[in-house]
Image (cartoon, rainbow, N blue to C red; front, top):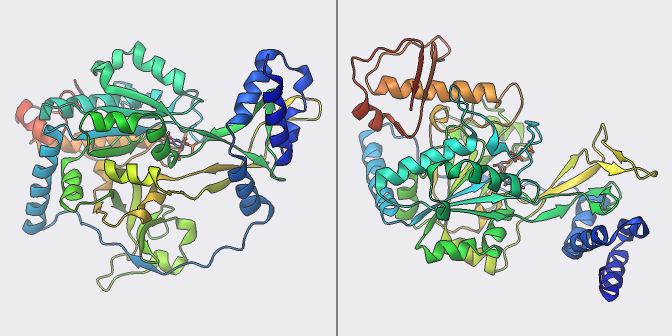
Length: 472
Ligand code: UTP
C-alpha cells in the first residue's frame, strides 16, 4: 500500500503541472498497480516536460532561422601514398591503444525498432546471410576477433531500455555471451520519457501506466554516468569509447585507423561519414554550423545546399552521418557532470491510448508526440574532432525497414558482397554481376577472418569459389 503522504504529494505535483488526469482510474487500481503508477510519475521531470510541451506542441516557435553553414574538414578515403602513410601511422597508434586495453565498445540498443516491426530487441534479428546469426552475435564475434588479434580485452557496454532490457540480458545469458567473458559485457539501461498528446497531456496506455519511450541515443551519455558504467570504464583504464548502433551489419569494430586519427588529434568526439548516394539523399551531414561542428539534418538543408558543389564538382556537403563515433572518456565525464543539455527532437507518432471506456486503442494516424535526444548533438560541444570518410559498401549497411532500402535483404546482400570482395582481395576469383552483387552466396565469420589480412593467411589462392561458401 503506497504511503498516503507520498500519494498526496505526487498527485498534487501532477495536478500542478496539468497532468492530474493520469490518476483517473486510481480508485480501480490494486496496491501494486498504484505503486507502479506512482513510481512512474515520481520519475517524471515535470519542468522539462512542461517546457517541451510549450516549445513543441502548444506554442511551437517559427522555424528558427538557419545559421551559417560551412563544410567540415574531412579526412578522405586514402587515394595517395601520402594519405596511405598517414592512415598506416594512425592505424599503429590505434592498435597500441587497443593492445593497452584503453578502448571500450559501446553499443546502443535501447531503440524500439518500430520501422522493422520485429518483435523483441533488434539485436536478436537474424542477419547472417547464410548462418542466420543475430546482430548481437555478429557484433560479439567481431569483438572476440579484435581481442584475439590485439591480445587485449575490449569491455563491451550495451545500453538497453526498459522495453528490452530483460530480454536482451536473457538472450546473452542463453547464448553464453557468444563466447565473451560475462564480466566484460556490461548492460545499462537508458531513461524513458513520457510522450504527450496534441494538448500536451501524458497518455495512459493502461489504467496504471503512462506511455513512455526511450529518451533517444543521446540519452546514452547521461545513462553511462548514472549507471556507474563510466566509472567502471575508468577503473578498467579505458580512455576512448567506440560508439556504434545495433543495426549496421558492416560495422568495422573499434577500427584502429579511426582510433588513431582520433587520439593523434586529441579529439573529444569523432565521427565516420560516407559520401552521399546522390545529392538529395535523406541523410544528416557533418558541417560547421555557426562555427561549431554539427550534424545538420537533411530536413534543415535547403535544396541549394544539398546540391552545392566544390570547384572540382564534388558535393560541398557530402559527409553523411553513419552514427559511428569515438568519444573520449574525460570529455563525456565533463559533459555529463557539467551543464550539458542536449536538445530534444520531436516526432509526431501513433501512440496507443485508452479511450473514454478505458479500452486500449491503436490509432491509425499520429495522435501524439515523442521526444528523443540524439548522440550527435554532443558534437558542437567539442573543440577538437576528427571526421573520417569511409567506403559505404565496406562499412555501412543498416537494417532499419522491413523491406526496400536499408532492410534485411539489402543488408544481407551487402554483407555477402563485402565478404566476396574480401575473398577477391585475398586472391580468390569470385564472379560479380553488373550491379556488383556476388554471383552466389558467401558469408565469412569474423572468427575465421576479420578482414582480408586474416583471409590471406588462411586461404589458399588456388581455392575455387563455387556458388555457396560459408567460412567459420
Ligand atoms: P534508430 O533511430 O534507427 O531507432 O536507432 P530504432 O529504434 O532502431 O528504429 P525505429 O526508428 O524505431 O524504427 C539507431 C540506434 O540507436 C538505438 C537503437 O537501438 C539503434 O541501435 N537507440 C535509439 C537507443 O539505444 N535508444 C533510443 O532511445 C533510440
